[in-house]
Image (cartoon, rainbow over all chains, first blue to last red; front, top):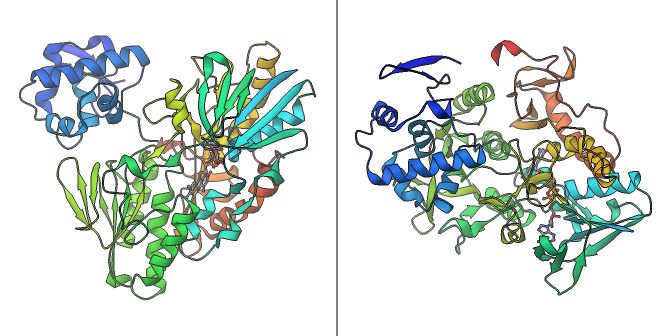
Length: 105
Length: 411
Ligand SMILES: Cc1cc2nc3c(=O)[nH]c(=O)nc-3n(C[C@H](O)[C@H](O)[C@H](O)COP(=O)(O)OP(=O)(O)OC[C@H]3O[C@@H](n4cnc5c(N)ncnc54)[C@H](O)[C@@H]3O)c2cc1C
C-alpha cells in the first residue's frame, strides 16, 4: 500500500486516496481530507455522519452504504447529498478515513 | 428424526433440497415451502420484451424438480421466530424445525421508490424482473417507434447486476434491426460512477456503450419518479426526462427476514460469506439471493456455492467443524446484441479479467470479449438449468474460480 504525507503525518492510502488504516485517522486529518474534496468546513451535521460511519465500521468491519447511514444512522439521504455533494457514499468514506465503499457488486 | 426446513423453492432452495436428499438418510426429514407452484427461469425474462422467448419458455411446475422424499408445501411465509425454531405461514399453519435454510431470494419492490407504482406502471413505466412485467414491456416495445428510452438502475445490489446493461444492448440491436435506431435515444441511468462495478470490465463495457451511442448518466441516485411529467428526479435535484422508462426496482429480501432481526437494511440475511451460517442463530443458513454476500446475486453463484455448502452442511449436522470455504465465484453471460455475448468470471477477491473459459487458453468461451459462441452458451444454459442444475446433477465445470487462462497483468 502506498503512503502519503498529510500535515506531517505518513498515512496509508489506496490508489484512489482512501485511507486504509483505521487508527491513523484523527479529527485534524478529517478536516484536511474534507478540504481536499472541496468541503471547507465540517459542521456538526458532518461530524455526526462521520462519527456514525466510524462507529459502524468499528463494529461491523465494512463501510456502511448510503441506505444504512439513512436507515440506521438516521440521516436522510437528501441531507447526505447536501453535506457531501454529488457522491456522498465515496466522500463520506474518504473523509471518515474508511476504505472505499464496496456496496455495489 | 431431525427436521430440515427450506424456505423458497427457487434456484437455490431446489438445488439444496435435491442435493441434501441425496446425501442424507431417512432420519432427516426435508420440507420445502414456496408461495408459488411455478418455477420461473428468471434469466429468460430478459428475452421476453424482445419476443425471443414467450412465457411458456420460462415456467415449469416447481414439483417436477423436487426429488422423491422431499415434502413440498405450497404457502407463503408470514413470519419466522428464530428463538422458538418456528415458521408461520399466512394461512395460519406453523412449522417447527431443527435446521432452517432460507432461500427466499430477493425481489423487485416498487413501493420503495416514490412515484414508481403509479397508473403509468405497465404503460410508460416498466421493468422486466417478473414475468408479468416482462410481458407488459413486450407489448410496449412493439409500439415504441421513436423517442427517449431510459434504462434506470435504481440501487445496488440487484440480482443479476448485468441485466440492465444487457437490456440496453438488446434494445440498441432491436431498434437497429427495425431501422429506427436514429429515432430512438437510449440513456442508461445508474447510481454508480461507471457502467459496472468492477474496473476492467467497466472500462470495456463503457467503450461498448460509446460505440453504440448509448448515453451514460452516472452518479444518479434516484429519489422519485414523476410519472405525470415523465421525469426521473435524483436526490441532488437532477432531472432525466423519458418517453419510455425501463427500471430495475429496488431489490429486497423477504420481509419476514427483517422482522426476525437477522437481516440487513434490505432484508438480506447476514451470514458468514464462507459457509452461509447466520452469526445470530447457528441453526439458520441462507443461500442464494436471500443472503447478504460480497459477490453478485446470481443463479451461477447459488450453483457454485452448492459444492461447498452441501459437504459443510452434512458436517454441521454431524456436529463436525465445517471445512470448506466458498470463494464467491460468479460467472455471468452478458448479452450484447446481434447474437453475441460476453462472459465474465470473478469472485470475492478477483475482478473479471480477459481470458478463456472453462479450459485455459482454449475456451470455447471468451472472457470479457464479445462472441457468438458466448451467446450460444447463454441460450444453452436454459436447458442445463432445467435438466442438470435444478435436479442437482453435476455440471462439467469447476465450482472454484481459476486464475489459469486469465490475463492477470490487468488486475
Ligand atoms: C431478468 C433477470 C435475469 C437474470 N439473468 C441471470 C443470468 O444470466 N445468470 C445468472 O446466474 N442469474 C441470473 N439471474 C438471477 C437468478 O435468477 C437468481 O440469482 C436466482 O434465481 C437466485 O436463486 P434464489 O433461489 O436465491 O432465488 P429465487 O430463484 O428467486 O427463488 C426464491 C423463491 O422464494 C419464494 N419466496 C419468496 N418469498 C417467499 C415467502 N415469503 N414465502 C414463500 N415463498 C417465498 C419465491 O416464490 C421463489 O420461488 C437473473 C434474474 C433476473 C430477474
